[in-house]
Image (tube, rainbow, N blue to C red; front, top):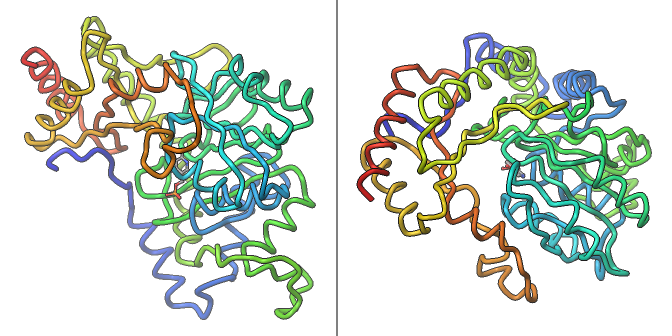
Length: 370
Ligand SMILES: *Cc1c(COP(=O)(O)O)cnc(C)c1O
């Protein structure tokens, strides 16, 4: 793609940091892991951060460390990345899909209650596209019903809700660092939690279930290899140093899109700000209005791509994917209606105003022709 959907922002200082690790004797479980975890914990304001191999493995560890397994249910949105439901299934538990609210496209708290059964153990809320979910309502429901809350903040590092950083309000929260995220470690993720006991369990599960005693043969849990290499941690340390600058830049890009596209009656644009919240811009997702169908959206997506402009169809509902189709009857009207009309536009730190002009000009022209 001439103008990609996303692009990592790698600088000379990042390259030097990674090269420095290669010149050292520690390629895994070394000083960069500790430095990265301390930096994440400090940024989030939690006593614990656990770096892991991906956002998905982070979610899986949250579910496992909370003791959720066979016979248990976890409430999740369907309008999200499939990793969310997969993490629940990998723990032998069942994801129960709940609809989204039509503005920020996050889990609708008013629909959660009806999905709770005697088997429900947790609510897994996702801060979709960097926009905070309504955590005060979700936590209130969870408290009243004795459930855990897990925050998928994989698209939302740095976002704030009522002055609190996302990821820090539930029992545990997860960030992800795949190259399309706000900051990257190549592959990687991190869990943050205020619960230090939970953190001990997560650290053990990350490393084959080995206990913190340091004895490699002292395993009490069936663990995984979810470690993050020193190379990735070194990159993460450098990237995190620039997070404020990155989030400001991304908000400015969203404003540039808004300036060019507002007033177009074929499009519904994402809200630029919400009261008492800070959005951490992950992608800029526009919605076609209701006179368009999925086939129109797909034609627009194809045509943009054929002109060298990367676009995304985020998200395809999880409950409609073949591997989840047998999850019982689900009625998720907002999820399905939204998923048919979304289009993610190119969004990366170094996108230029001229590129944004081209994306918007081309989009408006193509919409006029479908
Ligand atoms: C990126 C992302 C993840 C984690 O993805 P990984 O590729 O495993 O790091 C999880 N949930 C959501 C909503 C995401 O966008």
